[in-house]
Length: 190
Image: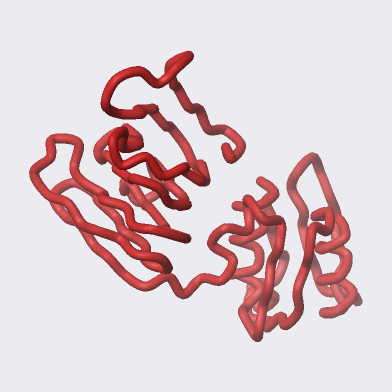
């Protein structure tokens, strides 16, 4: 599954001892197991190698890092020059940038929301909710009062249009919304 503003290059057929693609942007992969022909993603400054698994790849997460989240199976994340690598199991995020690599347990339940269209919150600040809406729906949300960002939201959104989500947030926190293109400006009702 390819996220918006992302590109993938692949051959017409996978011949030889590997299945290799090039990714720019973000994609979720569900790869059929074939130990004799590993699946390799060229993600710019890193390569992702798998035998059979499902995982998400971001070629630049905004911090000049290649980032991988593993859903099932195992993934080998390595520098494109092969100098360093880390093995990732389900639930872990690996990051490679410059001369550093890191592996940590994913704590963001909305990490794959761009693919699932499901968002869930249990007391998260609206600043976090707005960041997620930007990633999932490619919309910007501005506020006229920075205190609005501190309001806490609990609830779930399952495949709801972003206009509906904004309306629910406005109703819940007594806010007005003005939309210009894909930019929403929220303000307190007077």
